[in-house]
Image (cartoon, rainbow, N blue to C red):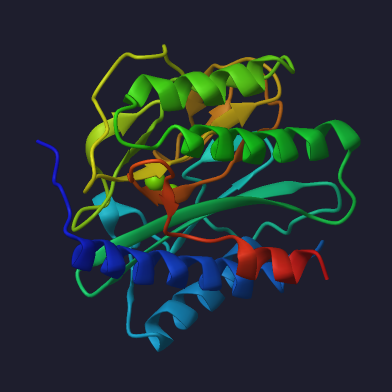
Length: 257
Ligand code: MG
Ligand code: MG
């Protein structure tokens, strides 16, 4: 069943989502070759708790950390480790918090040092596809319209859309109905209405679409070991124009400095 939110509840989700954006910006300040992801995870957890919130992923289905940190061919759900980031890596960082009983959930893929041009483009175009999808997150459109835009935008460059993982409704629970695939057909699927809040999160591979779970029981990686990008926003369905509740502005202030 879809949980429709009141405007007051949407404001609370916005607060949670903004805290996620600020947390990712804190982490962004430290991303450079030589840092290990467990260090970044600790910074994020402290920052979230200092803001009277709870890390949303830690303990969720048994996930051990605050951030999902997925490097290069890792798509999502990577576990922070002592392994150091290297020049030329990319790292997708997904963060969730709970504040006032509501989740925020947002992700961004960062460049570490100097990244190859084809990988830079993958990140740029995946982020573009997120915003293309968000343009369809308005009343009267359907879930398939969002996926169609993301798929069409990314496949024109020869990239692949991950099928096994999808976006989702968001609220008092991290994962609510409906599922939001990053592929689809126009005019197909659940009809979008005011009160729905969706986490839209394209996961786009440079190579093939196929992914596999590592033996750690969490990390999802591409089968061809080519890189994958992930960007996620929380969005309230509105008439005429979607309302983005999360933000990358704090992150981009740090990385574009
Ligand atoms: Mg997420
Ligand atoms: Mg999500």
